[in-house]
Image (tube, rainbow, N blue to C red; front, top):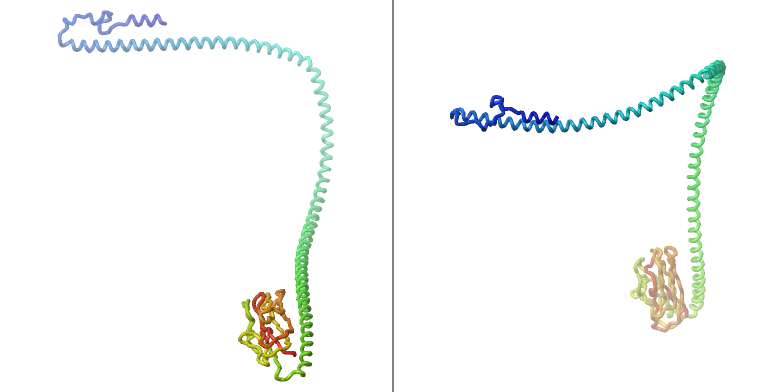
Length: 368
């Protein structure tokens, strides 16, 4: 192939030189006239271009030939490999054919045994067919029995559903009754607790009232005793020496918390020893005097007051705040000289309470 290309390259001819290989540059240009020079030059350029194109095409053709040769070599290698592989496969196929022939001989030898087994299976198949017929008959009978059982089961299911519905209704009624009874029991429990609380509160109130009543009774007994003593001594005293007073407050107060408690409403003032403007009693004559104070605290406010002689506390009256409007009282017998002063002074707490008929009062009288 390379030799052929070389030959084509060396035998390239010029169509412009009448199939001669003579170089165009060797022509005698002097023989040409001026008119043909330009045409000749153009033809010469075209010939040069054609030659260059031919050379280029020859190179491309040589390159293609080399590529084709490489591909041909690769194809020959592949064909060689295929031949080798084919020979190997043919050998394996021959071996398999031998094995198949051996198996065929074995199968031919065992065909008689197989036929005997087939006959035996046919006999068994006949027996199985007969058995299957009997089974079909039994299945029909069982189907009829099963249909009856299904009917009974459906009836039983309906009865069971009816019972379940009844049980649900009963359970619903029971739950409703349980809720009602629970609510009733809860309400009874609350009422019982309220009753117990009311009972306890009433008991405490009654106990406080009884204690207060006992205290007031004791104080009243003491007052009666002193009054009886006063009555006995009164007959012995001159009418000009009578001294006694009782005064009360005008209205209630929630804020009074210091100083002298002024009883500005005079109920009795024999001897004019009590001054309602200052709340102070001044003894007009020397002697033994009884003083009594009664105060009501304002709506569960704690209150403590003193009976004071010449700025010295002698007794206290306590109004406890365990309940509303508790009463505090006390009484004292004092030996006074003419001009001594006695009044009621704040000690603790605040406020006091009174009524249109006086509750908070201050009293005193001469007994001898």
